[in-house]
Image (cartoon, rainbow over all chains, first blue to last red; front, side):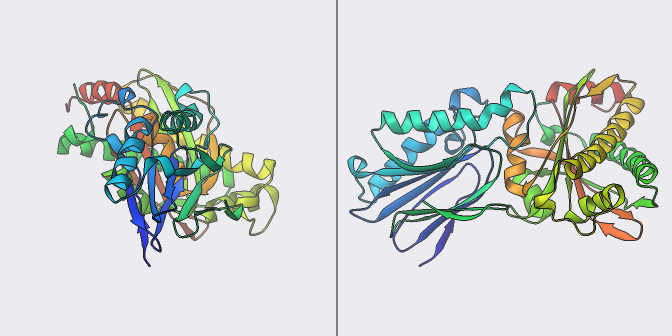
Length: 159
Length: 205
């Protein structure tokens, strides 16, 4: 069993008992997908809602909800997973700083974009720990389907 | 027109370093006056880093840090983020509130405001340096502050300035307050158009 770390704007897939982890989600959202039948899991750490909103959308598809999630699904499928069996758990999308700038609602916009893409792909969301104002580290255990969230001031929670 | 930090010439980087130097000096004086304690600063080390490197430089994504975000506008626009170790908040809260060794994750509203106010003063110090050197008028917004994981804090500038690229101007410059050494870092992110204006004004584009 090994821990596989997913950086900002990256995504990885694995088979149980490997564990997926992404550190310190702020306004970013971490999307865990699991096909429990074949024990294949994936985690995508997105920064922004839509690839059309960024200048480098085409060259950095893993940063955006609309392009990263389909990539994650395809990678899991190429390992033998089935989209029809996939279930999702998501975390992040916090508002780290209370300011007037519109762009700082990015956390809420990220959550909305992730939900839209998952719905379009008919992948149900089994659990979420999103919004509010604090950072989250996300562990995903494809073996059990458990998503574990660690926050600086809030301790550890399992979903 | 500059598109990102990678296009800055070595002379332009030196120029930004000098702004960092003067800003740090101003900030040390202002902090010393507020805290009624001697404050000196290390000579700042100014580098252009990508976000991941900046996060690692400060101690990794899960390191808990005080982040104070100041946005500014006027002749130039952008954002300054102060990243301060726990010891900084502890000294400020001790000085103003008389509390020893406060848990920075559990500060009450007044403790929090006191620390934020120091960020306000430091933000002003840097912006004054910038404004004085370039002859700009710059005003800053009310700062906002959070104590949380470094990686999560960095999401704010990363998303706000994602169109600018993956690089930030990273100023590493600890303070020594009353003999206590405190690591601090400053991330300066002007909008690219503003950086272009600044460089032209200083004659180094």
